[in-house]
Length: 208
Image (cartoon, rainbow, N blue to C red; front, side):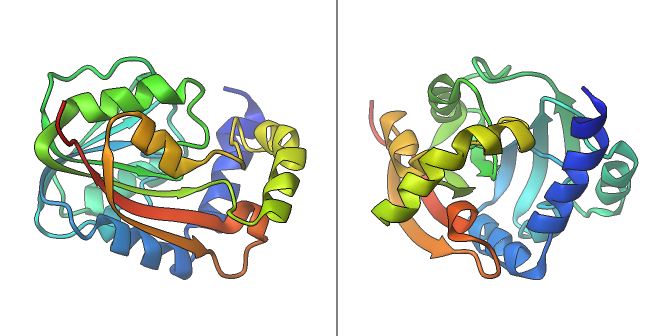
C-alpha cells in the first residue's frame, strides 16, 4: 500500500460516498437484509449505520485496511456484532456453501480485478433463500455517456485504485447465475453522470 492508497484515496472515498444522499441509497439497499450477512468490500465502514436491526451478525471482508482508527471507532459504536477479516477473496471466499442469509456489495464490483469468479463465489456462499443486495456505479444506459466512460476509464482506474467506470453491473450479476428480482437505475445527485450512474438491486440464488 502506497501513501496515496493509504491516506489520500480513502479520504476521497469518504467525502464522495459518505454524503447524506449516498447514505440514503445505502439504507434503501440494505433494508431487505436479516440474519447473518457477509459484506464484501467493507472499506471504511460507511454501511454500518445503515443496516436494519434484523441483521444479527456481520462478517466484513476487505483486501486492505483503510483509515483503521476511524473504522475501529465505527465498529465499536455499532450495535451490530461485527467480525472483520482482511484477505484477498477475489477468487475464493473462505466459507462453506450456503453460509449466509445475505451478501452485500456497495461500490465494490467496480474495483475487483477478477470480478466474474468473485460473483460466482457470492452465489456459492449465499443460502438458497438468501438475498444478495448491491449498490454499484457502472455503465450508463445512455450511449453517449457510456462512450465517455470508456474513454476516461484508464484514468479512473489509476486515480481510483482500480475503479472501473464502465462495467455493466446487471450483466455481472446475472452471468454469475444469480437472478435479479429488483433493479433500480439511478443517477446520483451532485455527481457527474460518468461516475454517478447507479445500479441498486436485489438478487437471489435461483436454481442450479
